Each structure stands twice: as structure tokens, then as C-alpha cells.
Image 1 (cartoon, rainbow, N blue to C red):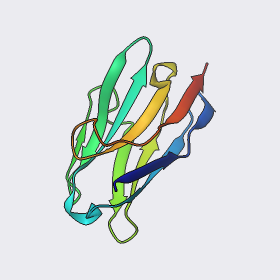
Image 2 (image 1 turned 180 degrees about the horizontal axis):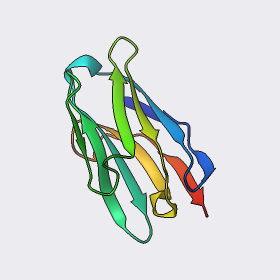
Image 3 (image 1 turned 120 degrees about the horizontal axis):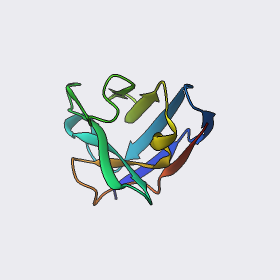
Length: 114
């Protein structure tokens, strides 16, 4: 059974930093693309970043240069380092198995205050 659990969300002031974590189990993590999505009422579902099994990365235009995705295949963990956050980064953040949104965790809320 695929299990994904996000953590690390919270409230942060604009310009600050936050680190999200995703613990994965139930599949061969080291052989699987992983993706961070976010969803907010105003903007809908957005792909934030993904990372290949070997560590190649992709970033959405809104976060490029500010966010960094990484993974530790030995621990079946994925991370999202969020720097220079903006109020528009406020959203529920989800980690997902693969590049789609089907297999995802329950999410962690990130709120950026002015």
C-alpha cells in the first residue's frame, strides 16, 4: 500500500524559509519520480517541483530560484526547501508518487504572512 505523509508546514513571514518533508512507504521509492504539488483556493492545483530517481529536478516558474527539491533514497524521504517565501506561496502542499496527483499524501498547510 502506497503511503505518503507530509510534514513541516506552518506559518512563516514573507521572506522567510520553511522545509517540508515527505515520508514514503509501500513502493520502490528509489526507482520512482516524486512530485510536490500545491493547491490554494485562488490558484487551483499547481505542480511545484519534481525529482527523478537520480536527482534531476523540474520547477514550476513561480518557484524557480526560490525552492529546492531533494530526496534521500536511503530513507525514502523527499524534501522541499522553501526560501524567500511570498504570500502567494500560501497553499496546501502535497507530495505525490510519480508525476500525477493520484497517489498523494494528506497534505501540509503552508501559510505565508505579510
